[in-house]
Amino acid sequence: MPNLLSRIVDPWYPATAIGLEQGLASVVQLERVKGKACRLKRAASSGIGDSVIQPSFDEPNIQNAAQLAAVLKDLATSAGLMRQKRWSLSLPEATARTVVFTMESQLQSAGELKDVLRWKVERSFGLPLEELSVSRERLQKDAQGRDRYLAVAVKKSVLAEYEHVLESLGWRAGLILPRHLGEAQWLMRNGSAGDSLLISVSSQGFTGIVFRDKHPLILRSVNCAETEFEDEFYRFLLFYRDRNVPEDAAGNVPLARLMVIGEGITKERAREIVNETTGGDLRPVVAEDLGLQLPTRELSFDSIAAPAGLATLSW
Image 1 (cartoon, helix red, strand yellow):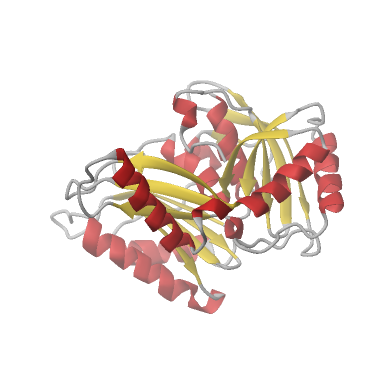
Image 2 (tube, rainbow, N blue to C red; image 1 turned 135 degrees about the horizontal axis):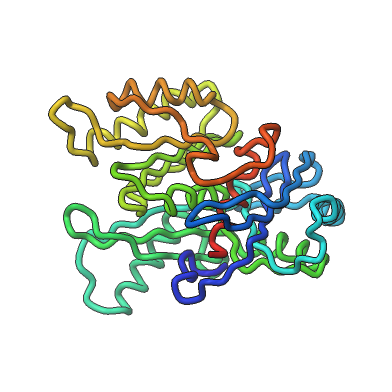
């Protein structure tokens, strides 16, 4: 799996991307309009059954590789993208795991850093490093000056399942990231004066990421039933409010943007919880707020946000 930010030294990625999630597959192609604005040039999506993909971190994902390949081929054909060979790929949320590591002390050598990161990876992801494909990126130091790293892990055998399906179509994925990091590109590429919050909801729970100056400040993935979602969401927001944010004179926190993707909670209810907890007056952003022009209002931004976010890395 490529380094998360290898675009810094190797900036070319395709403007075409595939999105896979439990129950849904999509393909997209973006084109740049002006500045950071872009337009969805081509897109297609299709429902897929549990008999095709059952997302999991440590168990086989693809139940029917031939059927998944056929679905992707049909989508690419209907979108006019069958001649594309290079893609980015957004993996199902449950397939990958993402954590932020904080180094409690200053490390003295590269060897010591390697050993500590290995220990943290294996402890966080619950598997030996040899079984994992891990990408890591150094983040800004925390308020105490400690080093922080963002790490994404996918089990090698699981990653190989998806790569083999693409290879059967003569395709290659140059960038592979979990769904929430595809969605996060919309907030990372469009900075704001205050913090930005992404809530990426799936059938297993949600991933919450707070960005400050386009860098992840807090990242937490929560597995929970739908009936527990609101309570867990409150806990996440309280952690952010109480430990990471200086209040203003009115006692409010500087949360400037809210992005809610997925089912399990309505955008309106998420807005109510966020504003009640932080003292703000936010509404969830829509595609137009992020510089994405959709060709029709019938197309759901939620269904293509992750692969389209990866496609923005082409410029």
